[in-house]
Length: 145
Ligand code: FES
Image: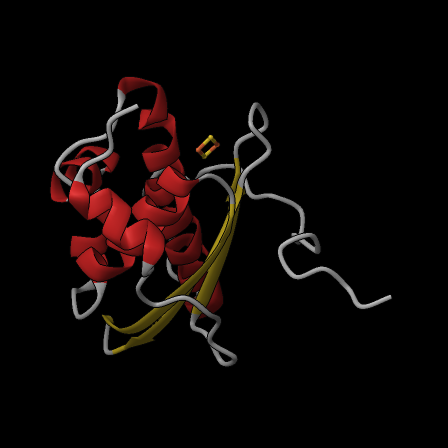
């Protein structure tokens, strides 16, 4: 399978990995087929995404696309982030193999899920499609025995 240099770079050196303790919105999405999970944290001030972090338990393309998605929305307004599509993420990574496109969908959904959580928290009506949320993903950070 051919991966672009950008995909390999974001896979090997993912940007914005981690979590935000006092996040304005958190979203967790998963793909039931492959079992991969993505969790996105947003810090939003005056409707601008001032910080974003993610954790992905998944394949290399899922890690690269979530990393790129965080780069694309950082510093953007909430409405701009809502316009982020998986296609834009794939383009920014110089493409993905066809069987890996679904991984980029997870990145788009994670952003939307976190934005929906933000809307809920501030009592704003959610006027966009919200992806199904995963149960709180305890398997992202395994509990210590
Ligand atoms: Fe599941 Fe990539 S194989 S997100």
